Length: 218
Length: 218
DNA sequence: AATATATTCGCACTAATGTTCTGAAAACTA
DNA sequence: TAGTTTTCAGAACATTAGTGCGAATATATT
Image 1 (tube, rainbow over the protein chains, first blue to last red):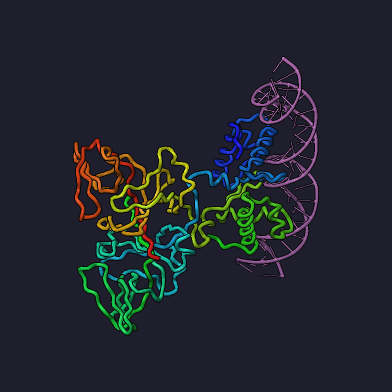
Image 2 (cartoon, rainbow over the protein chains, first blue to last red):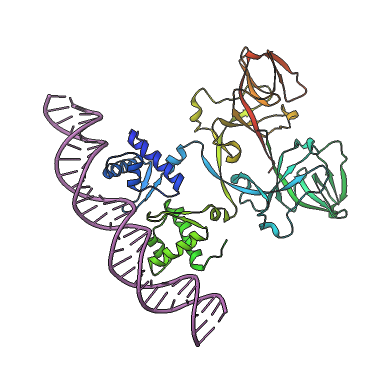
């Protein structure tokens, strides 16, 4: 792409800053003042050059009809991409029951904290939530205190996957590795200190599965 | 927040779409045509109502001086937030040297794969990159095969933090827990099978530190 | 129904803003 | 240096676009 003159660089930066601050583009006279340029025609002239060079789009006879071209936007590093925020529903500690999205209140999670995740990984974010781990009960799954576990609502999982399961007869909910063995289902805790247990398959309800772990060390 | 009339909803949606399409806000007459409204003054009137209700910002006597308020933006679900993409520089395996950003080519990472991370966590993304872990050499740090290690360029770290360090005398680079002990520096591998080693402190150069770990189980 | 309040209409007016033109200055080129 | 191209100045001009206002409707209140 063609090299820009100092003035053009200045103008381009000014436009960026202006949009960043106001959320709408500057007028030619805004640019004139902001960049200490002597005439509106000079601004107009250079805007045309910038357009030719592909750095911005200009719509003639439209006031403030400027927008930065994608090339320029992506030239700013780092690249900005969309993510989706998922609710952080609470904490999960050793053995203790942990929060699950209530009944149909799935959409109303306004009160809860949110965690940003890359959209590419979790799609629309529907049915996805996060739990913060307390304690080292899942240390054998390489999940430690303070980690964030990202979960997706699911009614079944593959063998060996980690999932939140409810034992109907106890009405308890825990996070375990899941192994279906025909009529019975084996649940292995993530901590080898604890025993694996098997249950009748129809006594085990899969609520959601673990899709990712995020550990921030700062 | 106050309830909106049909017309106001229509106008608000139109503004959103217009900005989305043009990258600059609509004029009053754009809105008038786009929403089939009979008079510019009606548009103006409703824009004032929308401003009162907090759904948009309006700058008087500025053409196209409209911008959506944050409340409105975040009312769209799921919430979209900025992230930054950091380069995935390569893989790191047990003991083997691993890729580092070359000299000053930091800005030119165009060729490399990118990974999205929440902006809130890593700021501008400057000096941040990711490495994919191969093998279980860091199993004791709860980092396993396939994990993504997020690193930040740093010249010093606190004791106990995991960092990429270069042993000047060997010209080797590894990922170790870092403990400064005055004149000497102890480096502990993340795998307890391996020995910790100490070096003269000025033989150890900190290149970057581990700030996060991302594990995707899918 | 009567009164108050909110919204809509059209239109004229004015301010904001893009465009154009001519010539000069500056930067390049041969 | 002479010639060519690019950039700049300044001002007049044209269009776009926001504003104001009285009157007409509509909607709500009592």
